[in-house]
Length: 254
Ligand code: 13P
Image 1 (cartoon, rainbow, N blue to C red):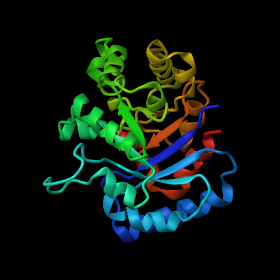
Image 2 (image 1 turned 135 degrees about the vertical axis):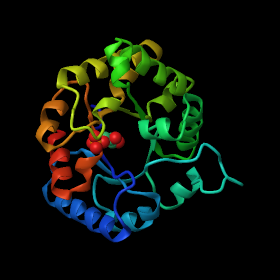
Image 3 (image 1 turned 30 degrees about the horizontal axis):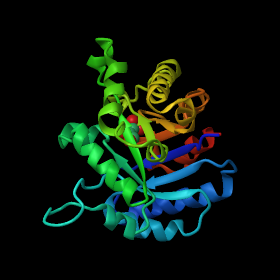
Protein backbone atom coordinates (compact mmCIF):
# COMPACT_ATOMS: atom_id res chain seq x y z
CA UNK A 1 0.00 0.00 0.00
CA UNK A 2 1.22 3.45 -0.88
CA UNK A 3 1.78 6.01 1.86
CA UNK A 4 -0.74 8.88 1.75
CA UNK A 5 0.95 12.18 2.46
CA UNK A 6 -0.61 15.62 2.86
CA UNK A 7 1.93 18.43 3.09
CA UNK A 8 1.25 22.08 3.90
CA UNK A 9 3.53 24.44 1.99
CA UNK A 10 3.27 27.76 3.82
CA UNK A 11 5.43 29.50 1.19
CA UNK A 12 6.61 32.97 2.34
CA UNK A 13 3.79 33.51 4.84
CA UNK A 14 3.46 33.86 8.62
CA UNK A 15 5.65 35.59 11.21
CA UNK A 16 7.22 33.25 13.76
CA UNK A 17 4.44 33.99 16.23
CA UNK A 18 1.66 33.41 13.71
CA UNK A 19 3.40 30.33 12.34
CA UNK A 20 3.69 28.73 15.76
CA UNK A 21 0.03 29.45 16.40
CA UNK A 22 -0.90 27.77 13.13
CA UNK A 23 1.38 24.79 13.73
CA UNK A 24 0.10 24.18 17.26
CA UNK A 25 -3.52 24.39 16.09
CA UNK A 26 -2.88 21.91 13.27
CA UNK A 27 -1.01 19.54 15.59
CA UNK A 28 -3.70 19.67 18.28
CA UNK A 29 -6.63 19.17 15.92
CA UNK A 30 -4.80 16.47 13.97
CA UNK A 31 -3.79 14.58 17.11
CA UNK A 32 -7.44 14.61 18.25
CA UNK A 33 -9.22 13.95 14.99
CA UNK A 34 -7.04 12.26 12.38
CA UNK A 35 -7.46 8.51 12.75
CA UNK A 36 -5.99 7.36 9.42
CA UNK A 37 -2.33 6.61 8.75
CA UNK A 38 -1.83 9.63 6.47
CA UNK A 39 1.50 11.39 6.99
CA UNK A 40 1.12 15.11 7.65
CA UNK A 41 4.07 17.35 6.72
CA UNK A 42 4.36 20.96 7.86
CA UNK A 43 6.62 23.06 5.62
CA UNK A 44 7.11 26.46 7.27
CA UNK A 45 9.76 29.00 6.23
CA UNK A 46 13.37 28.11 7.23
CA UNK A 47 13.32 30.55 10.15
CA UNK A 48 10.50 28.63 11.85
CA UNK A 49 11.76 25.06 11.39
CA UNK A 50 13.39 24.56 14.79
CA UNK A 51 10.42 25.97 16.69
CA UNK A 52 7.86 24.00 14.70
CA UNK A 53 9.93 20.85 15.25
CA UNK A 54 9.63 21.37 19.02
CA UNK A 55 5.85 21.70 18.73
CA UNK A 56 5.59 18.52 16.66
CA UNK A 57 7.51 16.62 19.37
CA UNK A 58 6.63 12.96 19.08
CA UNK A 59 3.20 13.48 17.48
CA UNK A 60 2.38 10.39 15.49
CA UNK A 61 2.45 10.83 11.69
CA UNK A 62 3.32 14.55 11.79
CA UNK A 63 6.60 15.51 10.12
CA UNK A 64 8.70 18.58 9.37
CA UNK A 65 9.40 19.74 5.82
CA UNK A 66 11.55 22.45 4.26
CA UNK A 67 10.48 24.40 1.18
CA UNK A 68 13.86 24.38 -0.55
CA UNK A 69 17.54 23.50 -0.12
CA UNK A 70 20.80 24.47 -1.77
CA UNK A 71 22.27 22.33 -4.55
CA UNK A 72 25.70 22.92 -2.97
CA UNK A 73 26.96 20.90 -0.04
CA UNK A 74 28.57 23.69 2.00
CA UNK A 75 30.87 26.69 1.71
CA UNK A 76 30.83 30.24 0.37
CA UNK A 77 27.22 30.46 -0.84
CA UNK A 78 25.82 33.44 1.04
CA UNK A 79 22.17 33.08 1.94
CA UNK A 80 21.90 29.39 1.07
CA UNK A 81 20.74 26.56 3.36
CA UNK A 82 22.37 23.13 3.09
CA UNK A 83 20.97 19.61 3.51
CA UNK A 84 23.20 19.16 6.55
CA UNK A 85 21.62 22.23 8.20
CA UNK A 86 18.13 20.96 7.48
CA UNK A 87 18.98 17.52 8.79
CA UNK A 88 20.48 19.02 11.95
CA UNK A 89 17.19 20.72 12.89
CA UNK A 90 15.14 17.58 12.34
CA UNK A 91 13.74 18.08 8.84
CA UNK A 92 12.20 14.92 7.36
CA UNK A 93 10.97 16.08 3.92
CA UNK A 94 12.31 18.69 1.47
CA UNK A 95 10.25 20.25 -1.33
CA UNK A 96 12.33 20.35 -4.51
CA UNK A 97 11.58 22.13 -7.75
CA UNK A 98 8.41 23.95 -6.82
CA UNK A 99 7.21 25.83 -9.92
CA UNK A 100 7.75 29.13 -8.11
CA UNK A 101 11.42 28.25 -7.67
CA UNK A 102 11.73 27.06 -11.25
CA UNK A 103 10.12 30.27 -12.55
CA UNK A 104 11.38 33.03 -10.24
CA UNK A 105 14.78 31.57 -9.34
CA UNK A 106 15.63 29.84 -12.62
CA UNK A 107 16.01 26.39 -11.12
CA UNK A 108 16.89 23.96 -13.91
CA UNK A 109 16.20 20.23 -14.14
CA UNK A 110 19.94 19.65 -13.70
CA UNK A 111 20.09 21.72 -10.50
CA UNK A 112 17.03 19.86 -9.18
CA UNK A 113 18.77 16.54 -9.85
CA UNK A 114 21.68 17.77 -7.71
CA UNK A 115 19.32 18.80 -4.92
CA UNK A 116 17.53 15.46 -5.05
CA UNK A 117 20.83 13.59 -4.75
CA UNK A 118 21.91 15.63 -1.73
CA UNK A 119 18.56 15.24 0.05
CA UNK A 120 18.59 11.47 -0.47
CA UNK A 121 22.23 11.20 0.65
CA UNK A 122 21.33 13.06 3.84
CA UNK A 123 18.52 10.59 4.55
CA UNK A 124 15.61 12.98 4.02
CA UNK A 125 12.69 12.56 1.61
CA UNK A 126 12.50 14.78 -1.48
CA UNK A 127 9.03 15.99 -2.50
CA UNK A 128 9.77 16.54 -6.17
CA UNK A 129 7.36 18.96 -7.87
CA UNK A 130 6.44 19.11 -11.53
CA UNK A 131 3.67 20.57 -13.63
CA UNK A 132 2.83 22.33 -16.87
CA UNK A 133 1.73 25.84 -17.76
CA UNK A 134 -1.71 26.54 -19.19
CA UNK A 135 -0.14 27.25 -22.60
CA UNK A 136 1.54 23.84 -22.60
CA UNK A 137 -1.75 22.14 -21.74
CA UNK A 138 -3.56 24.03 -24.49
CA UNK A 139 -0.89 22.97 -26.98
CA UNK A 140 -1.35 19.36 -25.88
CA UNK A 141 2.29 18.97 -24.80
CA UNK A 142 1.59 18.86 -21.05
CA UNK A 143 2.08 15.11 -20.62
CA UNK A 144 5.39 15.01 -22.48
CA UNK A 145 6.57 18.08 -20.58
CA UNK A 146 5.88 16.57 -17.16
CA UNK A 147 7.47 13.28 -18.22
CA UNK A 148 10.60 15.16 -19.27
CA UNK A 149 10.81 16.92 -15.91
CA UNK A 150 10.86 13.50 -14.23
CA UNK A 151 13.28 11.96 -16.74
CA UNK A 152 15.75 14.83 -16.59
CA UNK A 153 15.87 15.23 -12.79
CA UNK A 154 15.17 11.76 -11.42
CA UNK A 155 15.81 8.94 -13.87
CA UNK A 156 19.53 8.81 -13.06
CA UNK A 157 18.57 7.34 -9.66
CA UNK A 158 18.84 3.61 -9.02
CA UNK A 159 15.56 1.89 -8.18
CA UNK A 160 16.12 1.74 -4.42
CA UNK A 161 16.81 5.49 -4.29
CA UNK A 162 13.97 6.40 -6.64
CA UNK A 163 11.54 4.57 -4.38
CA UNK A 164 12.32 7.05 -1.59
CA UNK A 165 11.15 10.05 -3.63
CA UNK A 166 7.67 11.56 -3.29
CA UNK A 167 6.28 13.20 -6.43
CA UNK A 168 3.93 16.17 -6.49
CA UNK A 169 2.02 17.06 -9.65
CA UNK A 170 1.16 20.74 -9.49
CA UNK A 171 -0.25 22.21 -12.72
CA UNK A 172 0.98 25.80 -12.69
CA UNK A 173 -2.37 27.14 -13.88
CA UNK A 174 -4.01 25.70 -10.77
CA UNK A 175 -1.57 27.09 -8.19
CA UNK A 176 -3.05 29.91 -6.14
CA UNK A 177 -5.66 30.61 -8.81
CA UNK A 178 -8.70 28.97 -7.23
CA UNK A 179 -8.97 26.87 -10.40
CA UNK A 180 -8.22 23.29 -9.53
CA UNK A 181 -7.59 20.53 -12.05
CA UNK A 182 -10.70 18.39 -12.38
CA UNK A 183 -10.34 14.98 -10.83
CA UNK A 184 -10.33 13.55 -14.39
CA UNK A 185 -7.48 15.85 -15.47
CA UNK A 186 -5.49 15.11 -12.32
CA UNK A 187 -6.07 11.35 -12.46
CA UNK A 188 -5.09 11.26 -16.15
CA UNK A 189 -1.76 12.95 -15.43
CA UNK A 190 -1.06 10.89 -12.31
CA UNK A 191 -1.64 7.69 -14.28
CA UNK A 192 0.68 8.93 -17.06
CA UNK A 193 3.32 9.70 -14.44
CA UNK A 194 2.97 6.24 -12.91
CA UNK A 195 3.18 4.59 -16.35
CA UNK A 196 6.27 6.64 -17.12
CA UNK A 197 7.89 5.42 -13.91
CA UNK A 198 6.87 1.85 -14.74
CA UNK A 199 8.55 2.13 -18.15
CA UNK A 200 11.86 2.85 -16.43
CA UNK A 201 11.71 1.02 -13.08
CA UNK A 202 8.90 -1.53 -13.53
CA UNK A 203 5.34 -1.66 -12.26
CA UNK A 204 6.18 -2.64 -8.67
CA UNK A 205 8.23 0.51 -8.19
CA UNK A 206 5.63 2.66 -9.94
CA UNK A 207 2.94 1.26 -7.66
CA UNK A 208 5.00 2.04 -4.57
CA UNK A 209 5.51 5.75 -5.31
CA UNK A 210 3.41 8.41 -3.59
CA UNK A 211 2.16 10.99 -6.11
CA UNK A 212 0.57 14.06 -4.53
CA UNK A 213 -1.67 16.56 -6.26
CA UNK A 214 -1.26 20.30 -5.65
CA UNK A 215 -3.04 23.39 -6.97
CA UNK A 216 -6.03 25.04 -5.29
CA UNK A 217 -6.71 21.87 -3.34
CA UNK A 218 -8.94 22.58 -0.35
CA UNK A 219 -11.43 20.89 1.95
CA UNK A 220 -14.29 21.25 -0.55
CA UNK A 221 -12.53 19.44 -3.43
CA UNK A 222 -10.01 17.21 -1.64
CA UNK A 223 -12.31 14.21 -1.21
CA UNK A 224 -13.02 13.98 -4.94
CA UNK A 225 -9.34 14.42 -5.86
CA UNK A 226 -8.02 12.00 -3.25
CA UNK A 227 -10.60 9.38 -4.26
CA UNK A 228 -8.79 9.00 -7.60
CA UNK A 229 -6.81 5.75 -7.71
CA UNK A 230 -3.45 7.37 -8.56
CA UNK A 231 -3.65 10.42 -6.28
CA UNK A 232 -1.99 9.74 -2.94
CA UNK A 233 -2.51 12.94 -1.01
CA UNK A 234 -1.74 16.58 -1.64
CA UNK A 235 0.71 19.45 -1.51
CA UNK A 236 -1.38 22.29 -0.15
CA UNK A 237 -0.67 26.03 -0.33
CA UNK A 238 -3.38 28.54 0.62
CA UNK A 239 -5.55 26.03 2.43
CA UNK A 240 -2.60 25.06 4.65
CA UNK A 241 -2.58 28.53 6.22
CA UNK A 242 -5.81 27.89 8.15
CA UNK A 243 -5.59 25.04 10.66
CA UNK A 244 -9.18 23.76 10.44
CA UNK A 245 -9.18 23.89 6.63
CA UNK A 246 -5.85 22.06 6.40
CA UNK A 247 -6.88 19.28 8.77
CA UNK A 248 -10.10 18.78 6.79
CA UNK A 249 -7.92 18.27 3.69
CA UNK A 250 -5.83 15.76 5.65
CA UNK A 251 -8.99 13.91 6.67
CA UNK A 252 -9.98 13.59 3.01
CA UNK A 253 -6.93 11.36 2.42
CA UNK A 254 -7.77 7.85 3.51
P1 13P B 1 -2.33 26.54 -3.64
O1 13P B 1 -2.91 25.39 -2.83
O2 13P B 1 -2.38 27.82 -2.91
O3 13P B 1 -2.90 26.58 -5.00
O4 13P B 1 -0.77 26.21 -3.80
C1 13P B 1 -0.38 24.95 -4.20
C2 13P B 1 1.08 24.86 -4.06
O5 13P B 1 1.82 25.52 -4.78
C3 13P B 1 1.62 23.99 -3.01
O6 13P B 1 2.98 23.80 -3.15
